[in-house]
Figure 1 (tube, rainbow, N blue to C red):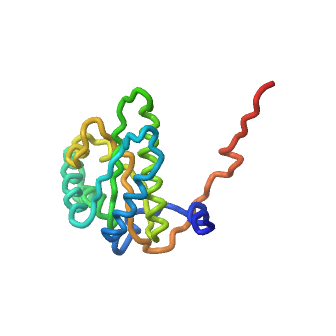
Figure 2: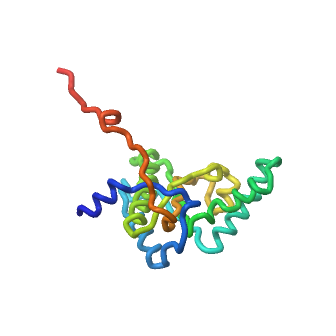
Figure 3: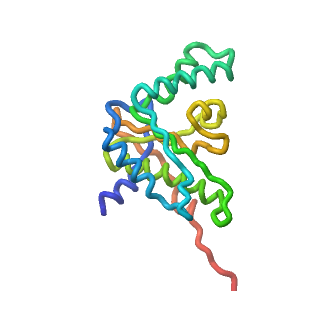
Length: 191
């Protein structure tokens, strides 16, 4: 248990451009996705799903991003377009967590969206526990309906996050964290 707590106490994101090496094997990938699907899900609605970008699919997704970026930014330089084309190819594997919340008689959409966020968190920690580094990002294309349609999302679906998974090119350095006295309060009932 202490190893798990140490992971929670020391986990940090690593920028995708600092990721190297091979991503998860098919067996590791499937295990990660099973773990990510075991998160709290009030009503058993499964208000999320996963899209995996690995191998050459990352490059093909980049072609979609580059084309759309050119349309949105007609004055963009070729170097700028190249950066966008490489967005999903920086890490060996990227998993999009798609939020598919919908009105429900009992479960508020907000709770369904939080469940999708929990899937992002579970996937991140599971990958870290397997020795990978991660980054949970969205970036501009997570909000572009044309890109999302090209990635197979319906108009009602949104991206909760793109989880980039790889190996660290160098040991991650921690960043300052908030002091508990800045983020914690205690409820004191009024008599």
